[in-house]
Length: 367
Image 1: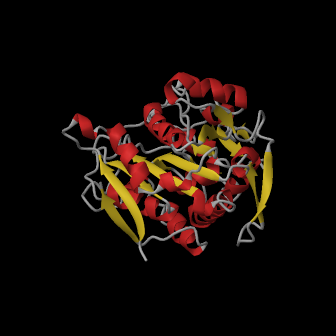
Image 2 (image 1 turned 90 degrees about the vertical axis):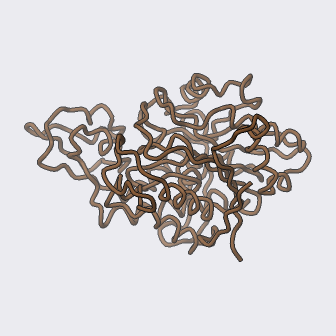
Image 3 (image 1 turned 30 degrees about the vertical axis):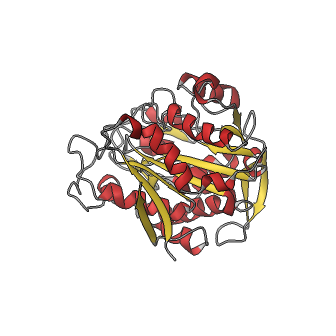
């Protein structure tokens, strides 16, 4: 049986069909109202965006979901976990301040924010999954403690995952720093001869693993595989070992997503926002030019199906030549391969299906 994915296109010609109204209709159409009972504490998993980023999910979109949860008698809270890298969300204090700075104040979203892994990312539990790469995974305690969750994801490109959607939001976003490190541990960057010795990467490495050897960067054994140096290098001189690292990383990431919903898989709803589709994650303190036009919003109870539908909807668009998209600009061509030609982003879909998280076979239902 095909999984149902509900789609609200961006185009509208009526005030009665604003995007806010479409979000509320998607909530009901996807059956999220059936998940929530009186006095349920409901986690709304979001990404608050790094300072300087402008592409993260609009807080007023999140407000629509909060109000729908409240209308059902639920008690919503917004949540995310601290970052592995050094930035404006590396501890709960900075994280909360960044969230408020980016518009997620209580007066806007009508819900409190709880950083799920605690002050210094030490608040987690081990969840048994018994899979290929992990027998147990580390999940933020306040996410693991909730029985109901709605995952609100900004669908966009990602330099190691190909794209980031519901699966990546679960995997990285529900893990403490130690769990993020476990997922990245397959990534072993190497420095090519293109290195200009600019030293940009030194200040971004959270492990202090990079030194300058002569006029070239060198990565030491204490590297934790977070990938910060890969994306910050201005001449793209630092790269993972694509053929061996990335497939393993994607499988590890998907196993973490599986662990994040292990105790509540039937009680999770997913919303993907296909707007402001940038080449990079919202963890960066900037946003690149959008690779395709805005598309709309999707909702489903199946994380594999909603990511598969999002991936195909993006690929169906014409690409923006004035963006980081190097090729595959035509309708139907793989936009994420156009960004990162060495990354097979669909591994997260096929492996998620293999783990029993959902199905790539879906029915797209327009509302």
